[in-house]
Amino acid sequence: MNEFFRKISHRTAEIVGSPWSFVLAILSILIWGVTGPYFKFSDTWQLVINTSTTIITFLMVFLIQNTQNRDARVFQIKLDELIRATEGARHGLVNLEEFTDADLMHLQLQFRNLRQRYGNTAAEELMAIEEELIRRDIPVGDKPKLG
Image (cartoon, rainbow, N blue to C red; front, side, top):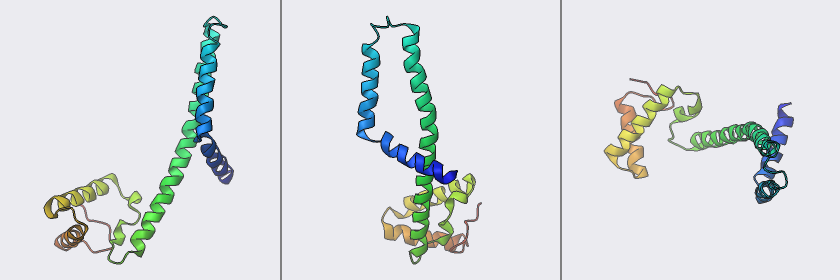
């Protein structure tokens, strides 16, 4: 079931994300608008576009969420691999998606403070991170201690 949904979502996202789908949507709206006088701008005429757009939007929410979740997982795996393969990298930053919001906020504040204190060049930031780790007794490769 998951593989079937993944394939359908991927193919549908490719189709819906194409310029031709956008043109088709614009044409549909124009045709609907032009037919207004023929149907005397009736409630049924308005209901057609309202119902159509609601159904399409409802289905697209699931499609977009599925493709976004998958893309986020793929991106996270690639980042984790880069961290793992980079000598001297803090391996404790692998799987950050598993950290609590408090952990992430703490890390974000650490990095912000380091940037303010040591500037923005990559070499300065790396040195500052190492110094901060030593100062806080945070072993490289471990999850940061809060507090």
